[in-house]
Length: 283
Image 1 (cartoon, rainbow, N blue to C red):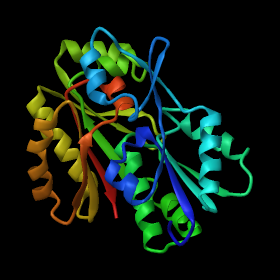
Image 2 (image 1 turned 180 degrees about the vertical axis):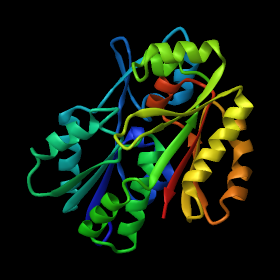
Image 3 (image 1 turned 45 degrees about the horizontal axis):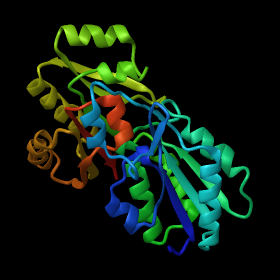
Image 4 (image 1 turned 30 degrees about the horizontal axis):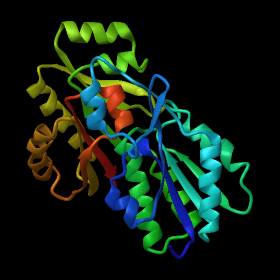
């Protein structure tokens, strides 16, 4: 337990790697993957490769943790001796997780809490959790970490190269007409979240090689000359991600790649196979 007696909660959509979950004793609220009446806990009962294996015949839906799940976790955290909770969630513009946690915390007495809407998705949100864990480990107080997170809200971003827009369309995340035109023209999109925390298309390129090149360019433009924490993500595209790694290291020598992993199952549902992502947190 850190000196501030502050626990970190993340939802599984933040895509924090097990290494950092364990190091900072993070508590993970699992999002849900639903195949009809069968419900699976993201990262516990189901992994992304299972989702890919069941595509395209079966495309599941996703849902958020319910309010009782959150209350139970908060009460468990209290029982461990923590005084405070910082909950870090994927964007409220893409999920009701932020709202559910905020409502749940009103029902929990005897512990101070803060819920951070990252306006981001996947590791774009998760990098905030890792940074918060580091600050707490360094001895920063609850108030100092909360203030720092709020100031850095626009310093984290994740960019995804996607091989297809079909799964975002099926999940209702983008306009169907946009996906159909993109498929017809073989356009490979780069997707991110805007300042309101909803998806937008950063760029569209014809062909996968140009798409990966553009992904690297836009991510490194965001990183600039700053020292950054970088995450290299993939969705059933580990070979493509491995090819991008040395390019990142050459383009941003001050930065450190701290996460390399397959995206979580709930992200896989909405993005499909063939995804490469670069997350950047400016320090």
